[in-house]
Length: 358
Image (cartoon, rainbow, N blue to C red; front, top):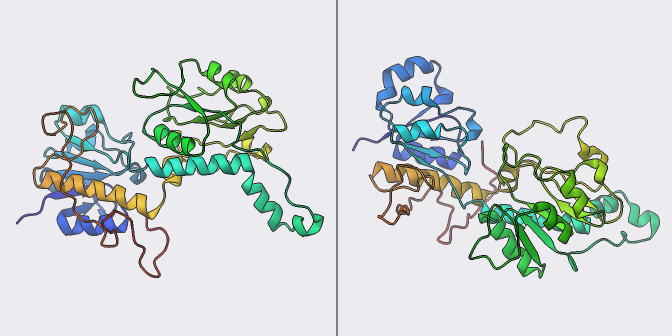
């Protein structure tokens, strides 16, 4: 049986490479010395694209034009900014991504960051490692707490709800800000972010990057939050609003671009209580379990196309497949990693590194 022909725009995790090589005739763009010549002679044979923003390759109109028979694009990642969605829709190409896989991992990390910020765990560890305990004979100073604290969630989508479930388990009251009130959510709702900041003492922002959310958390919001507050926000509130005592910053930049290093004059450097982190959906979810599940979903989607079954298309895509209800029918799972057991928990091989990606 002839295998479907797939073009991968770059490196993928090894378990994905193994599956792509096993189930498809896969060509690797990053290994082709003369791309123009290859596409000229083989472009019409390619039926699917495996891609991801990490490859640095744009799946745009120019590339699609050279691959006239592509019917599916399997994107490794939730965001599909590197794909020309309008062009794909015009050509009837199904775009699939990996939604929901990252939700729980990012929510775990958000709570970890919040606790680390409020309880000053990172500073306490540094204090201990620097020998201050033996030097002073005293324990680390008292910290703030999650008790008697109310959290305002800026955004209450899938990740926001996962964070909300964890806050509820901690017994922390919360409310949310969004574009509209959600009928099935039994939490106080605000359509005015400044007003919500005034009524809480902790803010957690769960937002996509881009112009629509840029500077949403601004000086007015920081001022409304007040000096006796903890802020885990994106972007960071201006340093001029910082007050001593309880204010803590845990910045989680979820921006379209990823700087190679922190800017020399960044405000983070002047705040000892800051805990800056890199892009949360990438770094925070960089676990073997999550990354393997993402790869599994990409392979499942491409395999579904190969067997002419409906994959998991990008929500709202014009070429969305399914069972007539508007929901895509999940394809039969094709095992990607033999170390993943029945409950989808990755079982690390003896002596294997803790990460296996790029």
